[in-house]
Image 1 (tube, rainbow, N blue to C red):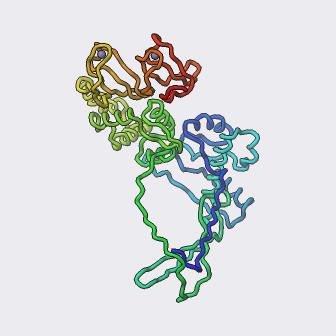
Image 2: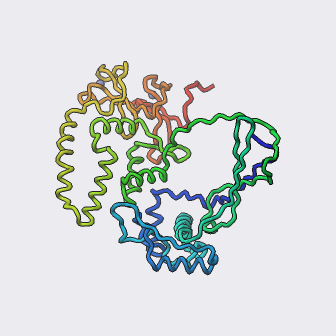
Image 3: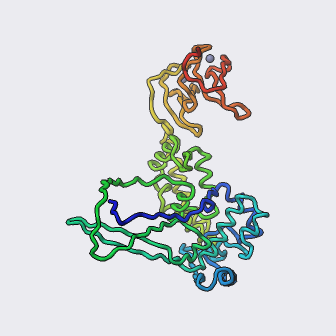
Length: 397
Ligand SMILES: [Zn+2]
Ligand SMILES: [Zn+2]
């Protein structure tokens, strides 16, 4: 509903330069050049700040922003096995502002340093204060609520601008009669949970205690290199057919290994071993002996692994039935007579277009040694038909 006297004023204080798109796979690289000079040790999830660091932040805030902006806070690491040996990642010298370092660091490094520098200061700064107004409007049997907020004091937002909305309500008096301008019927649907990005996936891993700061990047790299997931244009992960097949197989045959609690407990045990509280040989034996027994059993049991579906097609080599299977490289046709017959046909790169030259092979998407994409006959090397542009399946005029 839009009420005549209530106009929406939206002011989004959000600078694009504060969108950090530093992905974890490049993090290690960026960090290595940074860490030895300008930041403390980075492979840590500790939130602990030393007394020295707290004093340094206090001095900087008092000198640059004034007393009202300072608020001391001490954070404690929540995790059971606190890695308090390390400090939280912070600038070694807060006087080195991102501006001062902008000449020395490259673009990505500077973005990351800027983020660390701002978050470090912001955590020792006062809260931002908003003035909030709520107006209740009654219309016979219906009640409406209008809410507005205005920033009164920016506090930590001074160094760490985040997205917020200001909505100004007009001057209203109690009991005032408002005029209906328009009624907009809107229907809202519950949104399905959105797909993970690198950042949200790490958050989820953190939540369940899976992985450690030093293993987040390798985990994200591995699932992509093995072709279990791909990224869409919004950099969100979606599972591949191989990803689905591997997941189904693991859940069915190794439920205890893929159980979240199992992995979290394992990480816990590894921490305890690192802290000298547990014996590594015993811990390993507890895990490995039953695992090995199950693995040996499954090797014999799981024969049809990777089979997605059966087809009516016959193998051109031996005449046996063809199966759709899945590998690291995607879907392919394989002979059911394997390993006696080794016939395979790549489905991931097939176009379904018959080769116009030999009329036997199919046009396949391929990559040259130099990495250039081209389309060639599946009958190669017998047929050497090649196209450098994507075939349409139509005959050229
Ligand atoms: Zn065959
Ligand atoms: Zn051909």
